[in-house]
Image (tube, rainbow, N blue to C red; front, side):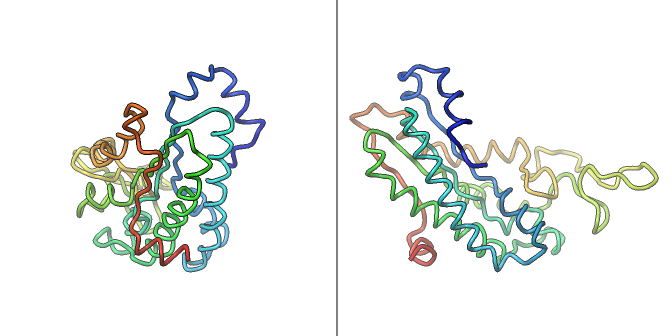
Length: 231
């Protein structure tokens, strides 16, 4: 949802300028825009690239607005490998990632975020902004654990669905801590998120370093992907 003046100003007005300058704003894109688009359009992921451009521009606009309101520290997330999310791996019975989903959604989105965030380095002269690389963190933390803990028992049912007879149309794993994903859509388990956070800890350092040790801008993303999608 775009961050407009009417939404943002009343919120930040509750805090002092010092509070805002010392706070860390986490800006995250979970991929709901893309899933909603695919649902409405009832089309394949191959035509979704124009939406990644639009979402990337909105991210930049929102970050600039937050900077104007007094925030100075930002963490901006990448999308995880969308082809490895349960909603994409279900057709393969959760045995393999869907490279088409990753190549058409996560990779161009993340490259666009890299370019747009990098372009803010002069505007954020007195701020710090880092990219939280959920893409790499998910790949490392999930390993081969693609099957979710909670999943539908038929091709048309999903986690938490019930059948016409009122009985559960889903199954649960015996130990959620052993699984990376919770449901058959996009959500990790608590243990999955804990594994991801461990992967991201080093990226957060610049946000909490003393000013004279802090890098003004710390973008991270594979240069090959960036050149491919943002040129």
